[in-house]
Length: 403
Ligand code: HEM
Image 1: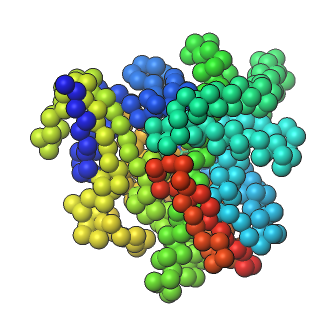
Image 2 (image 1 turned 60 degrees about the vertical axis):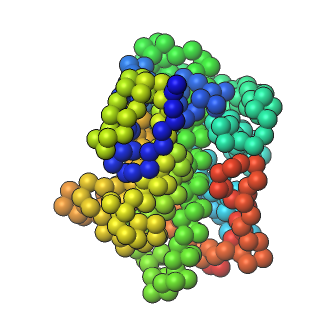
Image 3 (image 1 turned 90 degrees about the vertical axis):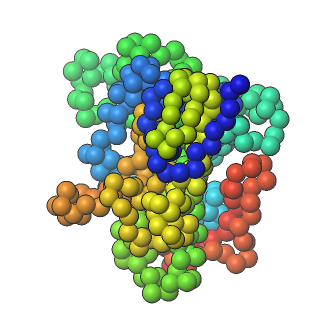
């Protein structure tokens, strides 16, 4: 009989992530959004789509996003909240990361009105509910029906016009009227230019874009809120570091990495074994078994991160070859395509020849933006947990802006 095997050690999880005969199964319950999207594909189908989409996740494009495109989006999103002097961190984080993810996914908002953004936000929240259905405390059929209806409305309202604009540009490129540089640099454009090669039916294009929207927004929004919380707690215990939050972006980036290590946005990975396997540690896995990656434990493995592995410490020294975010971005064939965009690169002065071209990641840039505006927890509106999911998400978290 098939068993469920839970891996808790860093080395086991890393080895299992890299085993090509372990197939994705984390999103089985969320197929209403996740069927046939990149992270649920396997083998050749995954390779072909990933190779195409990888073109968008190059260092020069990341730098363009981080230096040229994202700062204005972050400023525009944060400004009304700062003007009001207060915000709900959960709401702000999701809005912010959705605005950034919409750029990379290729979802236009032609009206540019707050109402239009609120509607996209409601669709996004519904997609997140669909993708994480496995952890929902609500009836599955009810959520699925709501998600299906949200996908259909999103299609008509946002995706169809976004597709039409891109198709017109692709036609103009073919006619020599515009250059390659004038095409949007987003996933939707990549998919439309290759729709025939990949044999992508329209409903798969819709789900892939919905998935990119939620993969980019939800994970980064969670990391953003938790990082601010972790930094406020750190500063309370280490007041000498307070100045670093505005003066040292590398310190903020280390805080982002440490937050992501201790609180993986997706706390488990899951695979189904397609063959029998034996891990180097001796763990036996049989065909049909479900293998669960307990990332919270693996990322606190004292063999790798030391005896204080469970503590938040942005000054932590790591062994060679270990990412400061642990395994929170996965590894192997499904390793997060947006890792550098979200969390930047681990600084390496020798490789980079200085910090001019260093990638800090959008989470770092966004967190620092809040500190630049003097964000602090609002004692009048303490954090409240979300009762609709078994996962530890906040439903609300009040903050005030003091500058
Ligand atoms: C803090 C931020 C993020 C975290 C913690 C995170 C985490 C992850 C993890 C753990 C996986 C692997 C899932 C698995 O193997 O089962 C993954 C895959 C993926 N992520 Fe992220 N992610 C983040 C940000 C982003 C962003 C900003 C984007 C898009 C721009 C993105 C797009 C994706 C995609 C498309 C995949 C699937 C890759 C594939 O299957 O080949 N992620 N992410």
